[in-house]
Length: 127
Image 1 (cartoon, helix red, strand yellow):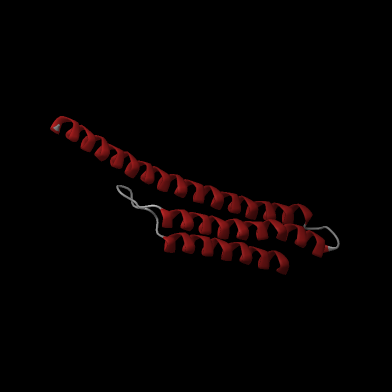
Image 2 (tube, one colour):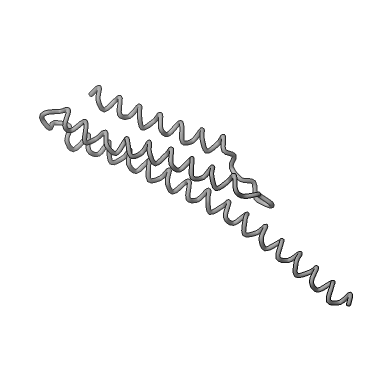
């Protein structure tokens, strides 16, 4: 009977190890997804700047500035959504071998980039 008991314990131990590895992989995938959302937001800021450059001489100027502001709003939405989704996922997972980025780091990055987008909008409207 000990052989069967040992085999069952080994299987249980390996199943727990595989689960730990899966959680670590999910944490890393969550961070990659967060970075992807952030990249999308940064791209939206670039689109806003491109719109301002292309439509800069357009009359009335408020129309061009409004069109350039829309991607900035989208960027802020992307940054905030990325932080919330990543934080929600991290609260459900336990890290084992990898060290997950903390929720404070995610909030800091999303907050600073949101301020960047809002500041860009302020500058565009002051031109």
